[in-house]
Amino acid sequence: MDAKTVKVGLVGFGTVGSGVAKIIHENGQEIAERTGIRLRLACVVDKDTTTPRVVSLPDEVLTDDLGRLLDDKSIDIAIELIGGTTTAKDIVLKMLAAGKHVVTANKALLAEQGGDLYRAALKAGRCIAFEASSCGGIPIVSALRTGLAANDITALYGIFNGTSNYILTRMTGSGAAFDDVLKEAQQKGFAEADPTLDINGADTAHKLAILAGLAFGCRIEMKDISIEGIQNVQIEDIRNAQELGYVLKLLAIGEKDPDGRISLRVHPSFLSEETPLADVDGPFNAVSVFGNAVGNVMFYGRGAGMMATASAVVADIIEIALGTSERLFERMPMVTEKRKAANFKKIDDIQSRFYIRIMAKDQPGVFARYGQVLGKHNISISGAMQHEGAGPENTVPVIITTHPTRQKNMTAALKELQQLDILRGTPVCIRIVDIPEDKE
Image 1: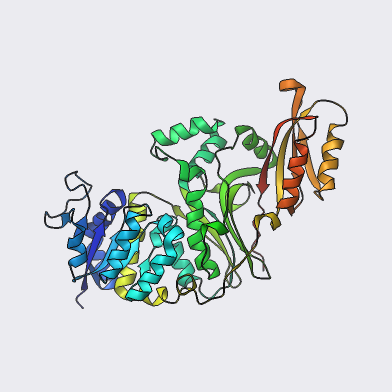
Image 2: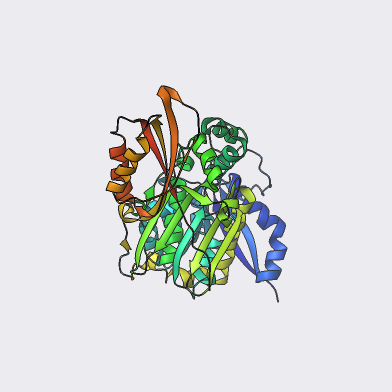
């Protein structure tokens, strides 16, 4: 049987856009044999039409005129790969108004402007596909939409940002300080010249908003997520954690409790070194999902890069061409808003274990005094560690780990600890996350 030809338009011929063109050019025959769909890249729009890319296009395909793509009625699917949330939003709205289905890898756009775009797509009778928006080449969107559709998803834990994970991995392995490793990551191309969104947790939060919306069946906004980055991580705490059997990761967490309340947060987390996510190193991403039927499943792979992300983009094109995405899109609760609003649990009410590092005066009675402060706030100490040798102002680092306690209790205790005359500096506090085991 002959394959059906589907014309595709692309806006943004940068790194990922070039990868998309390369896949369509090099793997087109295999795609046609597997799916019955023959993809044809009919129009590519970019401001730069002269710089050589990894794949060459016919002169009539590459243009700087967006109108060429919008006005071509034979193009059914349009791809947005320019990034940002302003011009990109305008282009996506124009694509939808012109009757095109849309594929995007733009996580910030969907996390911050998704509501407007989904409504526009429904009004136009078109769909938006976004596999490449979260975790690069890992097919996690498809898994949550269909592969795990038989499950009530109760939790997901993820390492979503390769830049942060590379930095923490190198700090752990080499013992180098944060600033030094960040410079190294920039030199090797693992970090942008401006790495702010990667290291402050915002990029991870964008992806969590998308994936948690799929997992829990609701619309999620950025204000629903508590966000803390890795910019204040110190090598001393990574070393101390290694002695205790923990590894530091920037973790995205989405959990639903038995009452249906959802908690969403991004923050540095100490994981047991025996936890599978603790072994995810360098620029790789991973997602651990818990469903009431399947138990725990974990997805691992390249979270960014030209070909990994382009692979996800092309997968979306194929699903639209096959008619799968359109049917699924119009039923997504995050799109239709038919399901009642989610009940979100505030960060203050979330329970966790904690790691605390205090620079205390080396004198009798110190341990008893900060123990009293923690006890006053219903915080139980599970362990303590102190190395010999005095530091600045005759202080020594004291490491405390706690039993589970609410965040607001810990916040109040830390505030009181800072007022003690036996301590110097600001206590360091990092959450210890216990990912549940998959048991029968």
